[in-house]
Image 1: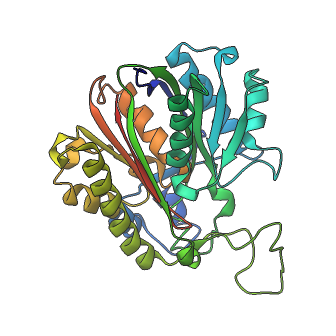
Image 2: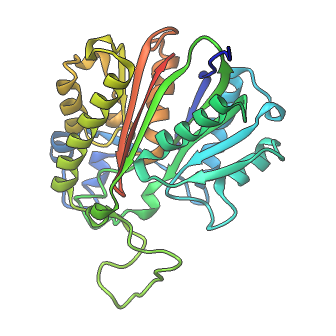
Length: 326
């Protein structure tokens, strides 16, 4: 009988740019206030990448820290999967650029674009590679420089986003690890949250709503996000034959405190069992879940053997979850 193989998180890492932009700083450049932003989003500050600092730079530093925590050398990596919607270049992939800096040349490396759900999608792919036996050690990264897409004159969106990266090293294990992952998408809702510029679509400066900027219908996104996350959490619990009270920690995508609180309420989970970093990081898209996970692990909150639920929702729409025994 073939022994079951799990993908266990062997190490976590994260990286945030040095520059911090507070709500008070934003109030100097757009019509807003700390109270207005904090009340509606829970965000107090966010990190901004320096001039010349790329998504790949943030991803590299997060990867190094995760590999150090896991005790893994670059030569041991069988695969690198990087979730991002703000790649350094059109090609090659940011994963290939990071791979080269790590000195891990030779193993497969590619990007996944699922917006804010990019890390969960990337983690799912890595999990499948390990379960199938195609890989034993995988580096998974979520990294963004989303502030490069922000319209700093639009107070409804510019207050939300920040830059950052998180990473995990997965290793094959016969005892514990990722129990299940669940992914979904609905492209019919794309115009509620999107960046309507691309290579094939082109750039037409004489048309309205053009430019590499984030366009979002906040109220509609909120409603869809809460419903989708509620559904994927129920799907995850049912798939694993678990009750919501079995979950030790919820680590959600850090988009908006109200969405996080709504998800926790539906799980009947007290907020002291929910990892929240949105106040310090803002919405870092693909970087938010691994950033929050790394912070919780290094603070000693998430302990080995505990049941952890990761979930995210992003433009596309995309949404998904991962349940793991840390």
